[in-house]
Image (cartoon, rainbow, N blue to C red; front, side, top):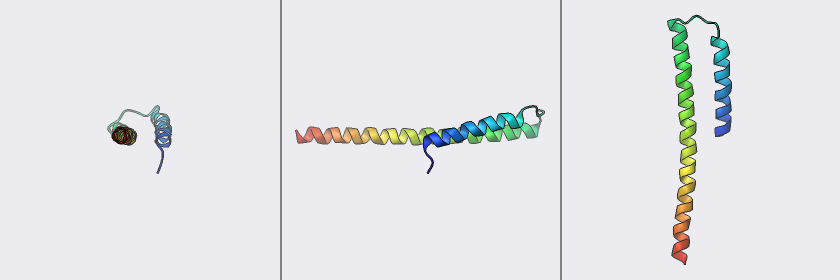
Length: 75
């Protein structure tokens, strides 16, 4: 599975490519639809990355919290 950093790097490359691909194109319904689709895919990818990061952070926090409780019970 890709790391968060790898996914973010792929998003950056994809967005840079989109800028170049759409530069100078007339703003038509088709172009607007393509841009919309690309932006939706990017937002979805960013949301997944953020969710993955927050889940990992939450899991690490909970493990630390649980360990703190166990340590307190031992004393």
